[in-house]
Image 1 (tube, rainbow, N blue to C red):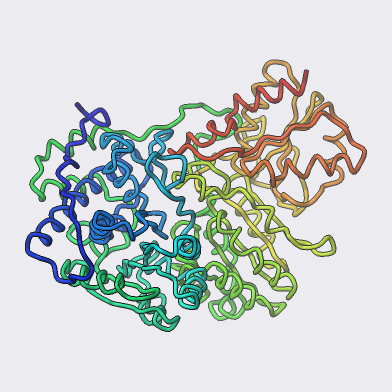
Image 2: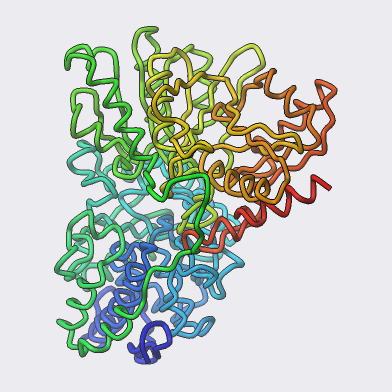
Length: 637
C-alpha cells in the first residue's frame, strides 16, 4: 500500500534486547554484534520515517537523532540490566525528537506505522517532544539547552538513581548549561551527560565561528569528569559510558563524530541538521540493501498538504518578511561606505542567519557581521554594548520564542540607553512545525520598562511595510523590536486593487493605519493576521455589514485619534496570533476603558498547544477567516 497507508517496512521487532554491565567495560563479540545490529536497525528506521517529513514539506531534523542512536542503544541496554538507572533518555536537543518517537514505538506506545505520520498535523508527532501529547514521550525538551538544569533537579529527587541526558555541542553553547554544570559538580549529582560533538549547527561549524570553544575543556573547567572518544567506535563508546557510570559524581562522554555518519549526501554538513531529502533517503536505504520500491512506494506517495483558501484583499504573490528584514537592512547599509558601516553598525547572529534574514547581510556587508553561537542572552547584550555609544547601533536577531530568554538583558540595555534593533522572526504560530515550544507569542515581554521610558514593538504586515519600517527606524535611538513570521505573507491591497504599502506610503511609528472605515464596528489586527482579517472584513462587507479594519503596526503605543474613533463605534475586535493572555487584545480593552470608551469588545489570539503540521496551526487556534467572521457577527448582533 502506498504512502502513509503502508505497513512500516523495517521490522522493529528485530531489535534485540541486551544487558550491559558497566563493571565490564569491554564488549564481548556477541554484545558488540548485537549493539551494531540494533544501531543499524534504528538508524535505518529513523532515516525512513524522518524523510516523510521532507516529503510532506514540514522538515524534520534527521542528523542529530541519527547521530545519537549508538548512545541510545547503550542506554537501553543499561536500563534492561538494572533498576539503578532512571529509565528516561532525557535529551537537551529538541530537534532530536525522532529518537523519542522511535523509543515510543519500540515500547509499544504507538504502532510503528504511525511513525510515517511524522510532523503531520494532528498526528501528535510534532517537531519537539511534548509531555502528555504523544504516547510514550516522557518529557518536554522545550528549546535548545534547557534540559540539563531540569535533569539536575530530577537527579536530586532521585538520589538513588543514575540519571542520563543526551547533549550536543550546539546546546552546550547555551548559558543554562554552564550553570547546570556548576551545580551538578557542587552537589556531586549522579548526572551523566552523553554529548554528540559533531561540529555542526544550523548556520555552520562551531570550530569555525566559535574559535576557542571546546566542549570537553569547558566541562572539565566546571569540574566534571570527561571522557572524549570517537562516537562511531562502539568499543570506545561503551568503555567511556561504563567509566562515567562507575564514576562517583557528574561526568560526561564527548562523542566526536561527523554529523549523520554514513549518510552519503548529508554526512558532516549543515544539511544534516535538517531533514534528509527524499532522494537521499531512498539512495541511503537502497545502498543498505532494502529494495528501492520499499522507500519509493512510501516517500514518493506523500505530498505536502495545505489548507486551500482563496483570500480576497491581498495578492496571490507572497514574500518572506523574515528574509526581507535583512534585505531592508542592506538597503540602509548600501548608503554608507564600508568604513562608515563598520564604524556605526554591528550585526550579530545566534546561529540562525539563514532563518532570520541575516544571511543576506553577511553576504553583502560582511564588514558589519559577527557570526556567533547559540548564546541569545550574551549576543543580545553584546549588540546592546555596541550601541552603548549614542552614535552606534547594534542589530540582533533570533526566533520570537527565544525573546523570553533575554528579558533581563533587555532591561539592562534599556537602563544603559543602548541602541539595539532586534528582529524576532517566527512570531506567532503560523507554519510552526516545531510546535508549542517554538510559538513566538509573548512579544509584549519586550516592553518591560516603566512608563517613563519607551520601547518600540513593530510588526509589519507585508514585505513592503517591512522595508518601510526598517528604512524609518534603523537609526532611531533606543530599543526597537521588529517581528516577522516563519510563514510567507501576501501583499495587502486597497479596495481599488493597488498595494496598500506601495508607492507613496510612509511608515509613521506609533500611528495606526485605517485599511477601511466602518460604521458597524472595527477589527484591529497586524502582521500575518491582517490579511486574514481583511478577507473576513471584506466578506462581511459583501453581506452588507459595514465593518472597518485597522492595522496596528506599532503594537504597544496608543494612537489616541484612532483609539477614540474605534472606541466610539459599536464594537472592537482584536485579531492576533500572539498569546491571548499577553498580547494586544489583553491591553487594548484597558486602553478603551481608561478613556471611558465602551464598545462591545472581543479579542482572538493563540489559546492552546499546537497541532503540528504547518498551515494547519492557524485554523487549529480558530484564527482562520471563517472564525473571524463568526466573531464579527457575534459582536455586531
